[in-house]
Amino acid sequence: MKKYLLVVLSLLLATGISAQSSGNESDKAKAKRMEWFKDAKLGIFVHYGIYAVNGIDESWSFFNGYINYKDYMKQLNGFTAANYQPDQWAKLFKESGAKYAVLTTKHHDGVALWDSETDHYNTVDDTPAGRDIVAPFVDALREENLKVGLYYSLIDWSYPDYPAHLRNENRYENDEQRWNRFTDFYFAQMNELSSRFNPDLYWFDGDWEHTAEEWKSKQLRELMLKYNKNIILNSRLQGYGDYDTPEQGVPINKPNNPYWELCMTMNDSWGYQHNDHNYKTPYQLIRIFVDCISMGGNLLLDVGPHADGTIPEPQVNILKEFGRWTSKHDEAIYGTVAGIDGKHYNGPTALSKDRKTLFLYLDRQPNQPVLVNGLDGEVKNVRVVGTDKSLAHTFDNNLLSIEMDSELCDPTVTVIAVDLKKTIKLTEPSKELNEFELASVKKDADWAEKHKVALADMTSPIPAGHYNGPTALSKDKNILYLMVDGKNNGPLVVRGLKNKINRIWVVGNGTKLSHKIIGKQYWSAVPGIAYIDLPEKVLDNKMTVIAVLLDGEIDLYRGKGHVIESN
Image: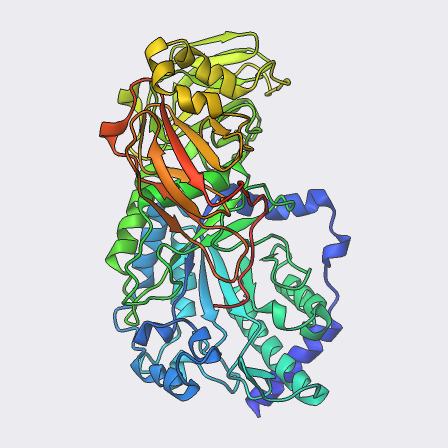
């Protein structure tokens, strides 16, 4: 009877409330509500659930037939949370530099991690853990002054009145009475989460299976605002969310929505999988983080705890390296806004909120001056963030030339701050940045002779955002030339390349180079990131040229990310 009354109450609340709706909110009011989120830059996504027991894909394993439903649900019997210490999680997240964290309160498998009064699976009644996972997580985050995010799957492939169950098996079609019983149920669960935990943010998932009208998205948004007028909702609510959530694939262009967040795994899995050791390096992940910052977005970096609640050591180590880098460069991260166009600087940039400091992100130890092209205004100072050191520089004809001291370079990403006397102003450059960056090396007769075959073949560069440095295409557009100034801190990074790579070599040297594609999802049009290993011994002391032979004319992805609808 108690559960029945709760469901009835949820329906009344969902249909009879009077609250702020997204359509009535001014841009100024939304900006104020979204301010902490936009300033936060780094969040932690926690995929924790029964799927960690066997170490298999969360929910998708049974939906796609990798394991039968009955065997998947047997994992309930192994979920102990015996070493679950959310206070230690929260301390680690804070140390990493994150400002918020999001916990999977219920994935598509329907297992709630809180003490739900609804008649369905939960970790209190149906697992050996016998405890509420969400409540202490929320308390621990608030103890560390971190914002609280709760993930909730609209989809519930276990609930008897939800139509979908397996990819090739539905429970019913077009049964309004059963569908209404399901929406009553999920509104009841959303009432529980809001009334008990009052999160700062909801991260919905699974909206692709039904329309906004079917989900009752408008009523759901109004219900959330009833509990918390400042609540922030992600985009997966069929048009009733606040911010975009591209997944895994890093956008090449800034999303149209000024509020967005890239969610990304450290390896290839969201939840813990014992056989997935394919971790990205801290360098790779921090470079991705910098790309998000430069486009005014956030990174929601995922961890997948073991079934007992401990976080795998490789994930802990990555978070600690994030902590080293974020603590050193905090002024160039939190509260920044999107940077300047790539025609002005070959790499990621950001601006302080008052737009009087330009931050340049540098993933190498350069041999040549660092250039900013088309800067219109006086420069007050140029310095290395995280140190007390200023850098020698010249500023002439709108071209800022900075002499970088390699001893001041960070082992991952260095940040140079250009302090301006007034708010930044930019002008159309008189020449392309590539011309300035290659001008001095082309004057060197020995260098020009060594690279003459490639130089004779080079035409225009590719658009900004794909590679941090000068580029050129061959005349037939089948070869991409990458210029490397100095020593890179890690592998070269090429984003958005749709082509297959046939061969890579060092021009004028002949050394063949290896590469690896990371992050390509079969369900997504977004290409993986190409990482090219570049040994120090093959570097040219002026400018190294790398030739990348493609399987045809170059084809670049220029989109803004994608959202998962399969796994």
